[in-house]
Length: 148
Image 1 (cartoon, rainbow, N blue to C red):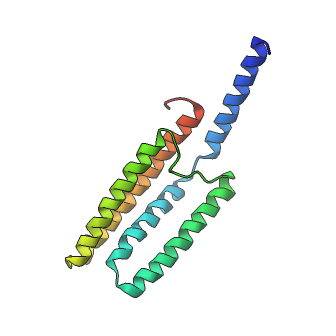
Image 2 (cartoon, helix red, strand yellow; image 1 turned 90 degrees about the horizontal axis):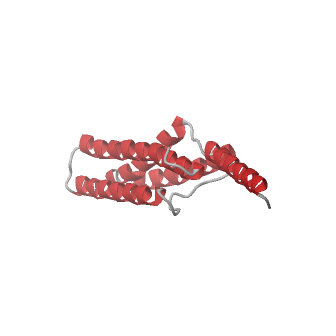
Image 3 (cartoon, rainbow, N blue to C red; image 1 turned 180 degrees about the vertical axis):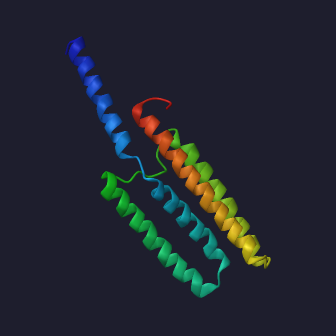
C-alpha cells in the first residue's frame, strides 16, 4: 500500500465514522422521553403499591419501545455503559439519579407532600434529559475522532 492508498483508506474510514456519528443523532423528543422514563422510575416510589406495579410495567414497556425506536431509527442501540469519554458521564448520571431515588424514598417514608415528591421526580426528568443531550454530543464527537 502506498501513501495515496493509505490516505484514501483513512479518509474512507473517517467518512464512515462521520456517517455513523450522524446516524446516532436523536430527535429532541427522544431525549425528553428518556427523561420521562427516569422520572417515572423515580416517582414510582412515591405511589401506593398497586400504582407501583402499574408504573413498573408501563416503564418497562416504554423502555422497550424506546429501544425498538432507536433500532428502527438508526439500526443500532448504544449502551450507555460503553468505554470512552461517555462512561464517566453515564456513571455520574447514575449517581445523580440514585441520589434522587434515595431522596424520593425519604420523601415517601417521611410523609412529605405530593408537591415535594413531584419536584424530585421532575428534577430526575430534567437531569436525565439534559444528560441525554450532552451524552449524545460527546459520543458523536468521540465517533468523529475529535472534541466537537
